[in-house]
Length: 216
Image (tube, rainbow, N blue to C red; front, side, top):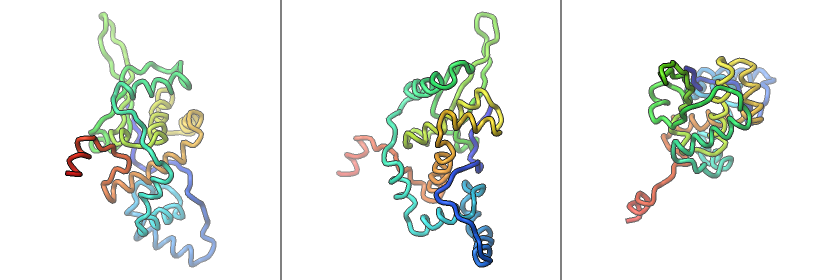
């Protein structure tokens, strides 16, 4: 089995800059010691990026920044619809990769495994023979997320059908399927930071019953 971990990964940028002066360097050291520990999902990224996110947090603008970049959620609500979506991407880019027998949203995945996605190989006996089938699970938080976030995690898990480790070949395959993969991964981590701080799911869909009761 393998997974997309919530540990920091490789990434893109909001806007990169370098600390050229000693005062900037001192500020960076102070930031690392005081602020960076509160941004665990972003700790592998440049300090300049982390500072920009921290500024958005202190100005209470992080949620609006995310909503401006990603105004709407996707409409995939069931495991069946998710399977259709994942298989369409697989058939477009990885038709000859191992077959996938099951795809599902998993409400326990993020909490229990500290992961956002997981792929596994399940061995079952069919007709007296042992057959291996691949399964993909995505954390339930992606049910209420922008289309780009769902595509990013799907691409990640599909890439594991061919490449087990998170090495250069793996990320090249991710970028082949989604050229903006690294930027999307960074933005997902920004959203995870928002969730860690507030617990607010920005794209959660309110059911008609809930909406009615809230107005009564």
